[in-house]
Image 1 (cartoon, helix red, strand yellow):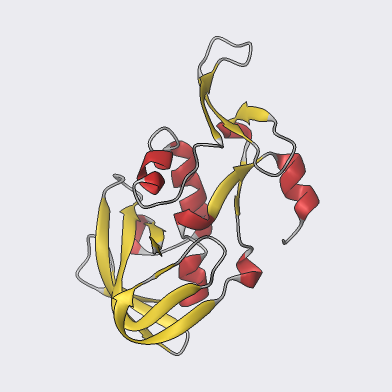
Image 2 (cartoon, rainbow, N blue to C red):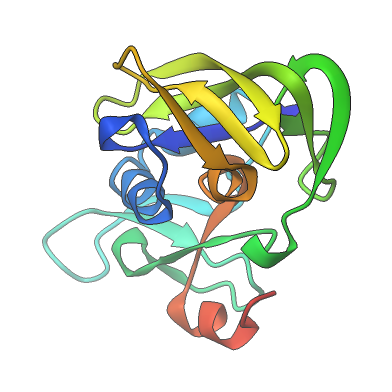
Length: 176
């Protein structure tokens, strides 16, 4: 199973813009984090290049078919499975939040745990959750309080479902 790896922002909550910024700013280590949990991004990662400048830039190969190699700073980070099509299968009992592969729905249990990445320092931590009627409650990273979020909002910040695309390909694909 590929665990959901949720990027947690300042204050211990979730926000897609925070997740996108964290991944872009930490791209040099990010593919390694995902690959350690069974998600391969090596086909997209192109190391660093100078792009005819005096600076080395993290580079990626657009996976949408154009195969452009661009600086990551130019990338649009987008969902592999569109936010509008994120689906879950509810299972009884206790288990991790995740999915069998990148094409299958996420599995959510009555209670369990998911992997969180702390936006502020990149540390990972398993957070316990409880699920009830489309919402998930979990303990905030670094706080002794709980947060409740719509499950689909939480999964919009799942790093295993995010990829860099060139702006042209991202705009031409729409909400697919």
